Amino acid sequence: MTKPDPTPSIQRRPSDDDVLLTLRGVVKHYPIKHGIIFKTEIGRVRAVDGVELTVRRGETLGLVGETGCGKSTLARCITRLFPLTAGSIVFDGQDISRLSRRELRPYRRQVQMIFQDPYGSLNPRRRIGSIIGDPFAIHGVADGAERKRRVQELMELVGLNPEHYNRFPADFSGGQRQRIGVARALALRPKLIVCDEPVSALDVSIQAQIINLLEGLQDEFNLTYVFIAHDLSVVEHVSDRVAVMYLGKIVELADRDQLYGQPRHPYTNALLLAGSIADPDRARARRRIILTGDVPSPVDPPSGCRFHPRCPKAQQLCFDTEPQLQPEPGDPVEHATACHFPVAPGEDLTVLTPGIGSAVDQPTEG
Ligand SMILES: Nc1ncnc2c1ncn2[C@@H]1O[C@H](COP(=O)(O)OP(=O)(O)OP(=O)(O)O)[C@@H](O)[C@H]1O
Ligand code: SF4
Ligand SMILES: [Mg+2]
Image (cartoon, helix red, strand yellow):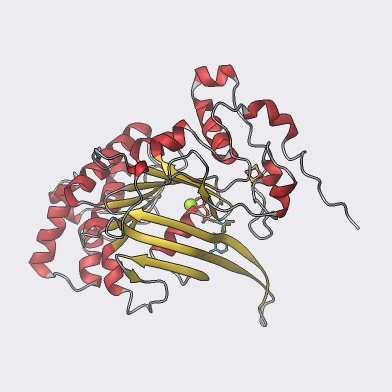
């Protein structure tokens, strides 16, 4: 959502000054426990499993991937809603990955989150003036008449009528409730907002209004967004760069036009083509790779490349060795792909569809 840059961003590496957020080897595992009294750990959900990512000042970084691939968990890692299992997060030059709850307070002012569900995230028994004013109360920023003035200013900013200060969430439509969420996120003038499916629960016409609002606010306050969505066309519309996530890892990262125009990872190809089923012309042409099978369990992810059981290009190397996220020869330096056999320009994966995974010699039992 940034203004066009005369120097194409894919031609240059970001300097430290450009980078707002850096994730290095970020891991979040949820323990699976068994037993009522002596709870023993019997496994782990590897929801986020070694994520490398940078987010630049003023950009919108889109994050896409199938359900359960770890997008929301990664969002919670960034906002430090829980401790990381491993890895580091550097925000504006400061490592925030090991800070205590108290030490995190200044960070919490600078990084906010907008959630998918504008119904569930608002307490129905509280007036919206008080809900939007929460960040002021929590951080002791303003109170009394000053707080009310600031809240009403925020309401106006996000397109709500300030006179509705004393109404309850039930008095507002879905789109208006998401505006309440945006106002609350904006209260402390954060630098980064992590938007976790902010428009997924809204009608298409309302989605456009909320996206326009977010774009306008980004320009006005020089905000940086991490924007998570299922809808690939929404992500294409809002993002400067896009990261594709699969089973806890980033498998491809590129400038938006580069990623949508020349996807290199077979999973990105499959996602984009599956997404285009909504387009009747493309669907009629039946040129799509079908993402066969379920996403494997993050409790016991596949060896080597985690996509190998579903990949039409899988070979033995994919089964044995995990590919690293890196630029492929000929690609712009900032287009990184984690694949041993990336998709070549013009390569048609649909002809390989029936052979998904069949090129791999699966180990035999016993
Ligand atoms: N609190 C938790 N305890 C245990 N497992 C969890 C917890 N939260 C998420 N998971 C698991 O971690 C994995 C990643 O979940 P996450 O919600 O991060 O995915 P997601 O990409 O946001 O999915 P969706 O697109 O459906 O929102 C899933 O297998 C999920 O079941
Ligand atoms: S070709 Fe191999 S490394 Fe690349 S996505 Fe397919 S299975 Fe993974
Ligand atoms: Mg989610």
